[in-house]
Length: 441
Ligand code: PLP
Image 1 (cartoon, rainbow, N blue to C red):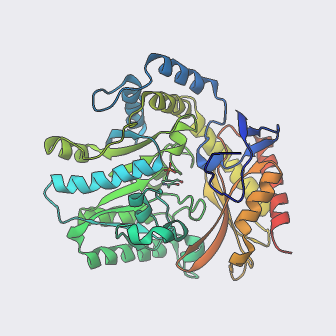
Image 2: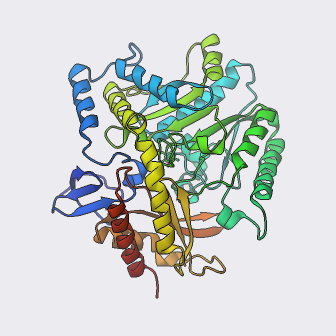
């Protein structure tokens, strides 16, 4: 009998025993293609010998030194490398153990920044209804994912939410990208005015939306309009790149493709590539200096932050992504993957949209392509697809969600950057079979 508390108590998972490249292997010897990288984590695939060697070397030299007393060589080197590749004037790195922790740190740093510069009246965050920023209470409150929030609603801080940039369902018929971006920007500005501009701390968004709706890419110019509005009101822009960052969309930071730079950003998943739990919050020099010149102490922290072994793993992963050319490979293979998905599913009667960027792709499933009507919730489509794909040796990430009262089913795909052309064919073949077995006829 197992004493593990599993995610789903009614559907116990097999025991994973090994990982080899793009495959995971269970105790029965069954192989699964990791088509979603877990949840956009495994950017290098499994069993990377360089990362394993870096972890071994670090754990033998120094496993742990509390950040209340020490910094460490791998933490310093990882911070230097992240900043060398980071956009804008991001200048300081706060290392934590995952995405939710990185977002909590981002939210609290933003609030403390305004205290340090004498604007204590700033207390509101604005985020988007189509978003997920983590499961700890602050991050959960910021996210707009109804399903994840519902049970905890009475415990959540009051965060204002505006419409997401969701062209497939959000754009009016005939509306141009620019007009859509303007409309969304006007909505944000109206919300800022409603709250009182001098009371708003930050606007929080994922550059490319991940776990709520599947690889939703903003229209061109949307984030530039958002950045202008934040600047006009002295509001910080916090970009959550936990899922879409670290090369997943074909550039190390997804925001590079939007032509904007954040004041604070969060990365995680792909930073450790699954080899160690690690996340990072990056902030601008101005924010760091406000703390340094003020109280000199960020009122936050975790025992395992800046963990040397996790940092060594992150450094080895980041080195492969940048110097090793894997971000460029994500862009190249991502373009091929996108084209192959479009060819396989672009005309599918139940695929409303094939979307995404780099190796971050998704299908939106619909009962009717013309009306974009979603499938009935009772069908449990996402769970069916996950099960059927898994039975065929494919790990993909289907989900159902409701945004502004409109339901949607999506399948997110985020394979390792080492995926080959032949493996793209394998993913598509297995996914097509899983859809065929899951969709109603
Ligand atoms: N932010 C985004 C965009 C995410 O997708 C996730 C996880 O899926 C998180 C934050 C939370 O990260 P973690 O699960 O590592 O706490």
